[in-house]
Length: 452
Image 1 (tube, one colour):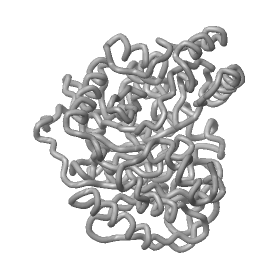
Image 2 (spheres, rainbow, N blue to C red):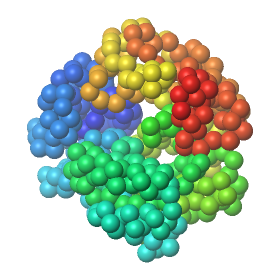
Image 3 (spheres, one colour):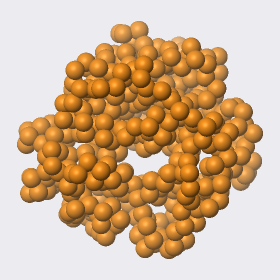
Image 4 (spheres, one colour):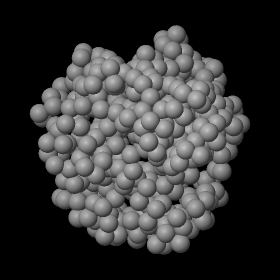
């Protein structure tokens, strides 16, 4: 391998380019018209315009991306996060052109990308899932009958959903038909399929992830847990590693379960198994993301590993040297996503041109940014500007350092959520672990803005 095309943009493109530079690999970036001149395009060895602002004409255009890859004779493509990162057709297109796809094979993506089918696989292998349908369920009478049987609230999910889309919670039977139809419409518009499934909605749960890595020689290892319960609109804001307030026995059970899931589906490369953890200590499979996650730096920080480098090594069919018992967590890390948004206005995006930026620094502070002063935050794509990752000897130290780092952060020209993130970190509920995935919307926003 001597060159890689990054089929993505922004912060994750910068992240991948930096690892490629470390490995001596040439990089080719692609960009849409609004992203011309962006920071990541200047870091890459080559940058090529792929199309207009609309993602389906640029970052989702498989034929155009493959054409650029062939024109530059790249060895591999890294899909990054979002866009085509979990698209099996893209993987097959790469394979057809003998271009290495840095990620799992199409079969794994198909098995796990269909969330209803993934749920069915877990049931067949005795992996705990919330009560609900065995697979997809696409007629209203059948769905309503099941919802009435398992009891409200229930959650209706798009089988091919992702990124927090195609999800609706229904608290009473009278609203079920309307919500069922809306989810199917949203699913068709966003994911190209109106297939859905129904589960019991488990209230006040935590969102816990396990990072796994698998090679082509049957080895599957994990890099511990992440706490990802700090969310708004089903999008994460703050993540931690390792997940706090979990005893060793429960943690091991979740980690072992994640490894079992990856083994069952014959998974290869980096992936993340997501669980719901209830207040009584039971956990349930939610989904598996067949790509690198936005929050992977907190795991890298406490385990001292470059997961993007690992992805590239696995794609080159390298066998793991590391053994599970050699992988040890060191300290604690907290990641804060800094978005161009206004939390006081229901997290309204704040596109615009960035002025001066002053970044936090010092021992234990890592900043993964996709933008510098003068860059534009586009209204067409995700509003994340950067991630601030702070690590310490324990959780208290990591939280304190995160608060200080956010105080140092200054970004002119757009509204950002740094003060809101500080409010989370300083809240007694967060410090004591009295949190769940709806805590921000149900409690913090109400306290700060009078929103419920």
